[in-house]
Image 1 (cartoon, rainbow, N blue to C red):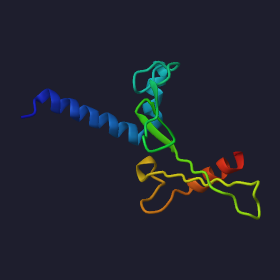
Image 2: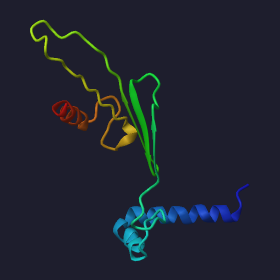
Image 3: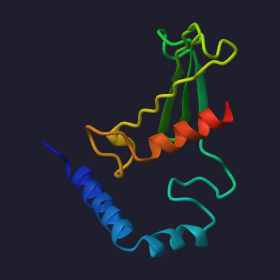
Image 4: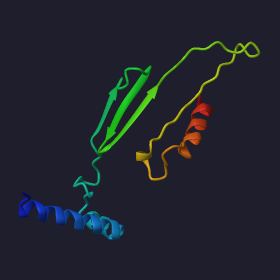
Length: 127
């Protein structure tokens, strides 16, 4: 059975969330007046950050980064190949960028994100 206190806390939390969604500017202004963020951090303090290297055992290199409640995973897999005879002193690089639908409301299941080719092109131009 749920106690009255717990259900009251849940109701209050739902009201705050509704206010945040309906009036985002007023919601954030209330925190700025007190020089704090909605998660109670002072304005000048960064979110907790951690980095774990070698997070994917099957990759040649990988990292798991956490910044606050946001988690990102990057992995690199490499393969040495023989260049074509027409250009023996040139190589190539293939870049695959995967962004699951949970990352953004702009990403739809079953097809690559529109941002993926842009990131891939930027990376290959850099390399």
